[in-house]
Image 1 (cartoon, rainbow, N blue to C red):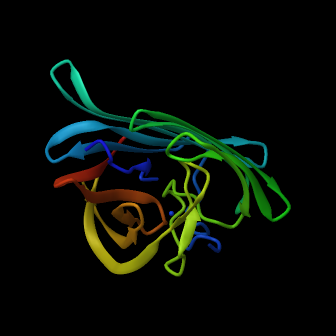
Image 2 (cartoon, rainbow, N blue to C red):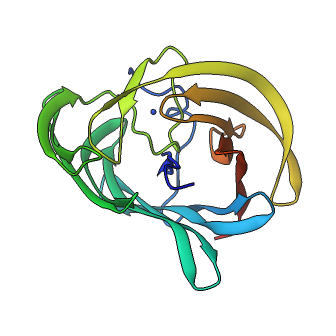
Length: 220
């Protein structure tokens, strides 16, 4: 479990994401998940949306752990702040605790580029410039199936991915059945993601070290 990848999650990813034009979060709205390891609670993953004038601010908070009695075997924490004007990412910053390492990322838009100060998973600082159109690995804006690289919100670096459309299926979300689009994204981790009719992120599932990890939507 120690090497579990959940970018925020995780887990957590281009041209403009396919679902961004459909999902328009309201100020004060929240996407909240209980994270389950099999049948056992593992933690929470929430995204809160606020408006600052014309800016949309999305704040992610992930807190995951696996413990046996007083001993914690796995701990993951991720906090991130995205600032958007329409479909344009203006700035991003995150703090992540993963595998015992503390990672920090800051990114600012300059023209069509992001100037990024990030860190490798070995806590080595890196400064780089990436296209501002890269999708973030925060999941809530969805992904273009043709994407082969995304912005890793844990490190600020590029992450290669393969995205597969798995069609539409009926899923139960907070006690009601909805039709949801399902995609599978393979990168450092292979994760299945579901999005509702309005493009809202409603479910997530993946396998890690023989364990099934499931994101279950709940009221905020």
